[in-house]
Amino acid sequence: MSLKLLVFIVIFSVLSSQAKSGKKEKILKMYKESIITTAGVSEVSLKDIKALNPSEFVLVDVRSKKEQQTSMIPGAIPLKEFEASMGKYKGKKVITYCTIGYRSSRYSKTLFKKGFRVFNLKGSLLGWVSSGGDLVNKAGLSTKKVHVYSSKWNLLPSGFEGVW
Image 1 (cartoon, helix red, strand yellow):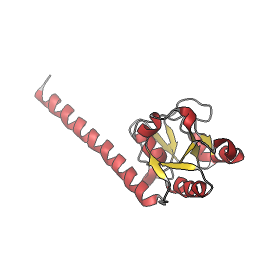
Image 2 (image 1 turned 90 degrees about the horizontal axis):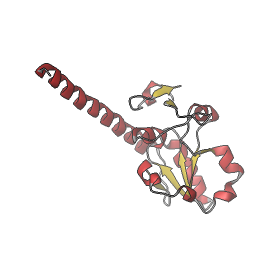
Image 3 (image 1 turned 60 degrees about the horizontal axis):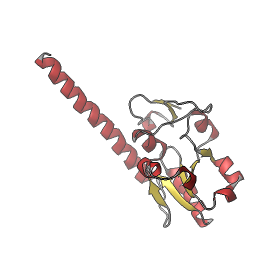
Image 4 (image 1 turned 60 degrees about the vertical axis):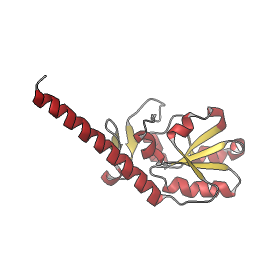
């Protein structure tokens, strides 16, 4: 292997790693600026969720139907479905998410006041995919598409496609 090729590979790897890191940092910054903090409502990450038994929690997608039709976290339920049968989730951890965290943090505050053990997904959907989380489309098949508001919100990792 030539020295020039080796140098190119090293530089490309470093820049690629920095770009990924920069997007994740920007997502977390936007998340922190967006959320409404409420005493009693904690954050959870993808790593935290993976450590839970699936029977212990429910993921609630508080985004619009149009956003949900593009993609959702596997196993998550739409807000309307959750609200139609809230009683069955009373003993579970309720984990809310949206695109970046504003809507889900507002909704988690409402649920906390109703007596739920509620958590907001750190970084919401953008944080989920930047941490390696999978998504499914409305047919339940794996997808790399994420509904984001605009190019400003398109902070998706390489391999994902933002739609708006």
